Length: 307
Length: 307
Image (cartoon, rainbow over all chains, first blue to last red; front, side):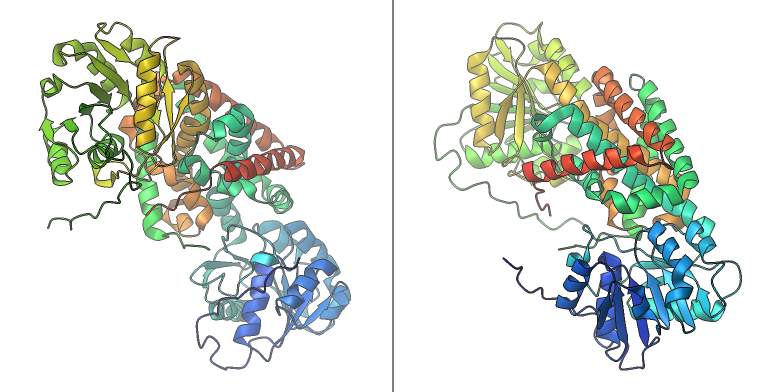
């Protein structure tokens, strides 16, 4: 039985405004949630641009059915003439692709990635031949489920898209990529790769590992009988626990030091709470601080109602 | 400026079905989210029952405006003739009230509580004079915000309401209380106090402490600049971090041993992950287990769309 055709949301009307595409041939390696959503958005905003998809055959088929891409191939040679290459696979696959990009892409091109960690990828891009200019990127999508099945052209609307230039160079490339992200509705931010990795370890990687560890501990300890006794609290707290391991394996490896520091902070805090359950002075302190930060978070970024 | 009048949801039509009230005079000590919601539900289901509220003056005023109670007083003597007494304050206040109940309530009465931990309250109820029969209770509400301002008569609909009898006795009281919970739309469950406290430490108390510690660590470490770079993941993971410290202080103290065991399990798991960020064998193991438990949780208890 095949799924019913999906009605895709239309990106903000007039985006691109019929202006010529910022890039004529956009190659996307890895058509998951992020890569697929970029493909859909580019085709809506710049109908004259060519979108080239590289992935496994079954994924390419889904992308073609969604009209996300114009050209599909498993062989990266298909992107020989791309003027923008977006690496949208898990971090270590992106790094492998950087090492062989010279073999596949024959023309000058802007290269970026969408990985959740930046230092290892930025470093791996340094030996690229001079016809390529690389600036790392990280759009913060935040959809509850991955895969091209959940891709949507408006995924980036009003969401931050972080670019992490390697030192001072590549300023015109950076400007073009910020324009690209803005055209997709995102809010471009610029920061150093190390600062990115430190901040994301705290605001993204730590919550993910915590949600997974929590769900594992609670499920194993309480069983289905216990899980049946829960409300929205555990449900929300563990939403991230359905994240796919393959993406997170690479994130953990490529940001191990910063994630380790973040985990140490949390472990220390939990140990303090654990020692203080009877007197609750520390419980009070942590609850007060947490309540204040939570109020600031809610003010900064009210939740989007996802479908 | 006063708030506009709230339109309260109507409980499932025909609940109670015009049948005589299970209790004629229902006294509720503590009109927060749970106590207030019970009051609203009882008045809807059994219009002829008298609902007596005991709390601070400002809370009583709000309860009167909401038409949640018929009789209001700060002095517990107002419940002298109650045939059902529901203790709905934080756990330690409930325990204090049990010690002085004999002074306030002069008639035979069923006594229950709605606290999130059960062993200390059940123990504190043992010396009650024989005209009282006590069975501890714990309705799992799970609304995002506390206070009578957020009370609603349908809060308990299709949610578990746990009763924790102290050994074998009080079976007719237990039956009446299960009927009461069912009339409010809840699903009554029966379990031993120790089993309740162990399970709730895992499925409720641990997620709460984790959310608070996580929000504290992430906020202090990343600041507003970092928090601005987040998506729904951190937002959902830390929803519980706005919970009020006063309720949780009592929960931590009255269930310190079980919460300590649960915290130890999580701390151990986080330390294993921390040591394994480079090889990720353990990351894989935890993600796999967490993904499976999360799928089972979602199947057991799909989230209610709260307003």
